[in-house]
Image (cartoon, rainbow, N blue to C red; front, side, top):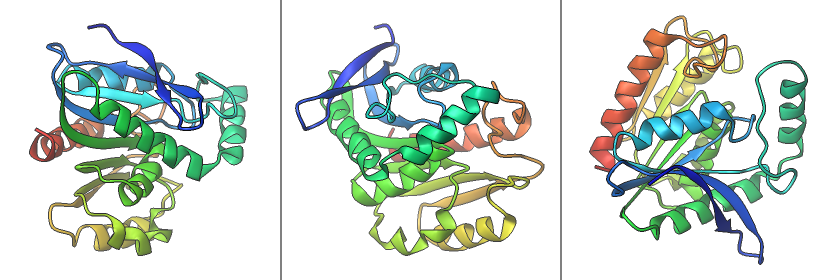
Length: 232
């Protein structure tokens, strides 16, 4: 099975695209991958393929489709400005609904096991938290989600285990914010928050200047162990 874009019903007679990367043998749990603000670009597809190679069906929905379909942007200059402008116009409730639709559709794909996890980076790291409250995933993994310290009152509505990663030098999330998130989320059974010394925002993205290979590898090992424990 080759990776490809598939159509997901939006519930209003339209469809939106999602990048589907299947596991080598076609069977496994489902991971819904929530993008950064740069769309389903090369890096997000590479992350999907990375997880698929380890035995997961991965679906990365196009979350900007109501504004512009199949956005694929770089990380600097005009692309960065466009990404920020798109994000400023994004309907967050619509994005949550799209993720939930992707979960439902993906769970019906041939070869999926019935277990569903969420994985998100930056904007996606915030979105997996909101979708864990709105839906019923079996786990949620978030990298450098911004503003979670302002949404800790929603934690009581989340039933699944959470794993969150932050860079200690992330200018978008000061240490007092990560401390607040760690104190609340880390107190939940089966959940954990890790803060990586010297790591900046985007430390997992090997296409960005802020990539930190050693800390990224630590975070990935923890994420994979968490997924194995919660999804199989």
